Length: 297
Image (cartoon, rainbow, N blue to C red):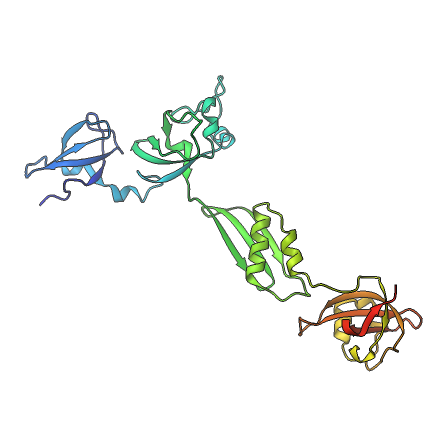
């Protein structure tokens, strides 16, 4: 019983007449003889082959390139660095990469044939005004899907990595502010935009709380009941240099004029906006909610 059937695509194991080693051919006829396969290449050449002359195309997919694979033509400087350049300015790939081919760098195409290191390319993407009928070799291309983006987070910092295979090409980070609640999707969005060089100002604006009073603004206490008399840890975190000016159980006087030192979300109730303010006469520091203040300017 024959291993291959009519219609199977197989790869040449060795050179044979018009078929080069590595070429992909199609079985067009079989019989029960010692040379059971009539195969045809893309140029129309036909030869009868032994079973030992060919291997399944599937075996080729274990290698870097295969027929039908989507690939990207490498960057000119990348190939120049690897293979050098001759006196005419062309790159010494297996099939010379001439300077006129440079507009193809970074473009996508599909492998239509492989014969050793020589390949055929078709279905070029965004190349309507670019000449594509050149001779190509495997050292001019790279898998189109070789680059991936991986996002990881430790619950505070989210990092986006651009990888080429197992190699990290570059990375970008997004750190959650101490006044914000960590959100993986927001962090991933910011990190990804930074990785791709896109603006993130609108993302920042969406995640920042909207405070009524600015830093260093003069405010007046209108409701001392909005004071947090036992919240020294808040001062320790956001204004540690003023911890000595904060005393538990102290209440500000209504109408007292203060200056805003720091502002942040409540450490557990993130919907509550708090201000660290300093009484401009006594220099006493208080933690007060937004509803306990009004502008004094």
